[in-house]
Length: 458
Image 1 (cartoon, rainbow, N blue to C red):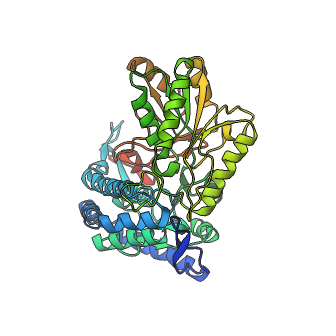
Image 2 (cartoon, helix red, strand yellow):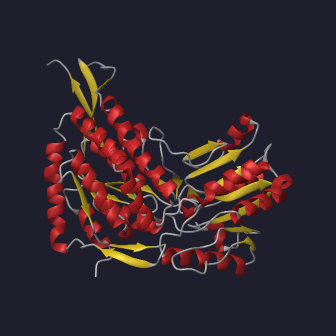
Image 3 (cartoon, rainbow, N blue to C red):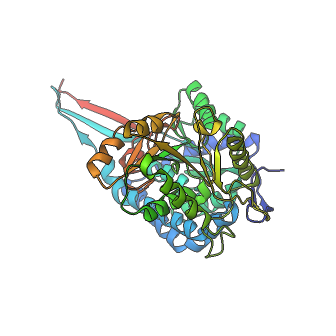
């Protein structure tokens, strides 16, 4: 039986199965992508941009269909699904508009020659390994810049996202991307390793867990292929002061519970100065308890299920372990008594360095609140984890907040906002959150041949 299925996390029912890639087709997929690349790289830059512009239009035209698919397959509430579809369209449009300029030849100081220039050329077929939590957004931030550059793509999506991955390929092909330039495969982990090792493949990008990232990076390194990794996060949300605690707690809860808490760059650790701590905890608990958990297709639902029963059970085990080790449970901490992968929004405090939850990423609707006595203690706590994706600082004093934000060991530091993602902003982390950048001009710089051409007279 194929592992690629639509297993509706709202009902717990498997609705559809998809035919998996067979081992004897792996080499042919790589060779096909190589053939597609040789044609696509020679397609004029403006024609590639026009295809991405048509892709954006198709995303908007088929928005209801796209949104409904991810609501069914991974439980994303309709409003969030609609927003993700529009963000994907915006990213394709951004690269259509800005990509040609970003590929312009750069003229350098000739330094004794007649001419020294830098050209930005595609490198070849790439493998993308994508997660289930943002089925469209995660793919487009890898696919859009690399299709614009002229690379071809073999896309391996998460097993529960077969329907959305198939729909994305259909739309790209309808927009004008040749079928061997963007190839959707229902591949196993072993088949992905074989693809990365294939001489035709020139790089791999993965968004996912630390374990998956380490495995892919090892295979890429053994075969001298470049990799880009976006892995986990345990983002700090540092509260220095506020003029409106109700508003701050509302923002904090919304940011943490968006996508049922299943976001790498969600604020998972709320670090609050002494004098605000008790009021913040009370306000955050109130916000978590006011959330309507239910059918993600219902417009009245604030938070849907987790992506799967196994994902829900994993979060439940982490919370139970934290409480067993001495953490204080303020609300939630339980599976909801209904079909599907539902879990109650949960607030924990009293977490110490000896507890597993201190250093783990809890990928679900769980907020952990820490009390600190000074800014220095807040920064030390914020940086005292293996992750370094993003973090935020909240204060009415912008200069002070910026100074604190500059001390965070993260790839993305925010002041009075958290997790903002826009087509022109770089996305990526440091430490165990991975390496490389996506989106903006930085996303077009990862898998390119920055090629020097220097001309001198004889």
